[in-house]
Image 1 (cartoon, rainbow, N blue to C red):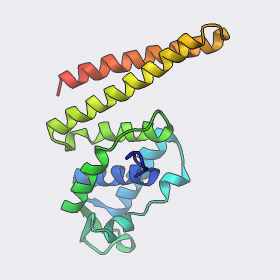
Image 2 (image 1 turned 135 degrees about the vertical axis):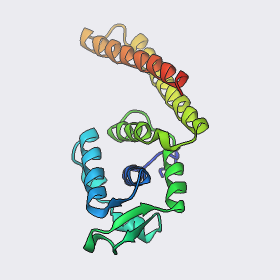
Image 3 (image 1 turned 60 degrees about the vertical axis):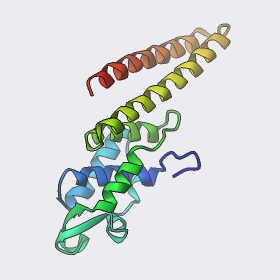
Image 4 (image 1 turned 120 degrees about the vertical axis):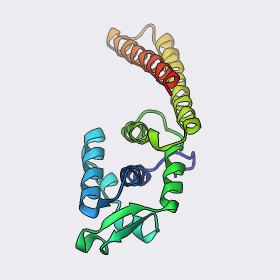
Amino acid sequence: MFADHTLTPKEAVRVCALGTIARGPMRYSDLAGSVRHFCSRVIGPSLDLMGTSIELLRYEALVEAIDGQGMEDDALLAITEAGRRELRNLLTAKLRVSSDLTKLVVALKFRFLHLLEQKDQAGQIDMLLDVCDSELSRLEDLRQASADEDAALLTWLDHDIEQLRQRVTWLEEFRKSL
């Protein structure tokens, strides 16, 4: 993790791999393909994200081959208890202010939210609300300080502010449904 306890790109891929396999055993090639597909659709192709090896997860005992050896024979892999603990640790990490990596991490949090206990699910929604509120305050402050700026900047800020307000409303409604 970064010093501020947010996920590195490598850890975001680990969330994707561990969360995917937590749903049930998968063949090595299917897991690799699923991780690559999801990450590249959220933020586009990225060498930073695709450098993580599933073999490393096996070496660290986060996943285990239950049928076969590994990559060489397309083994059936399953998550271990250590892998579940690591997944929980990664899923509950803090978020950095908006970035492509943040977009990926948020998508992963929602994709695997059901794997957390209800208390942890609510905590993650609360954390997302806090992140949105902070970003909204920052943008509203910038909007106020930029009142004399070009209309293009103000329009862009108004658009982002409205999107954040809608996201806050959506997150509040979603939290009620947990």
